[in-house]
Length: 99
Image (cartoon, rainbow, N blue to C red; front, side, top):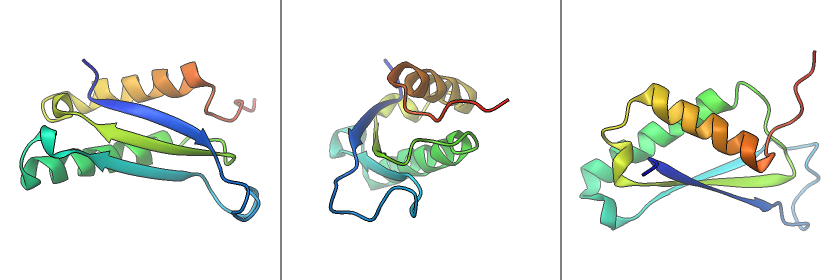
């Protein structure tokens, strides 16, 4: 099982043009994951994961949501990073790499 689920959706049209704002990233962790301490730990790990992923630009016309799972607590951060990279590439949610 992955440590998170990545969801993407088109940015609503009533927001400012995507060129003026960066990508929006949200985080959610349900109570099924554990108590408040565990949920906050998963949320902190997801925030750090998103900061790592933002090194390569994301598309500004999409909104991103990372849904934390209990497996994120024990998973190695390098493995989580690889999962996120793979998910972003599979969904085409990144800007093309510039040479």
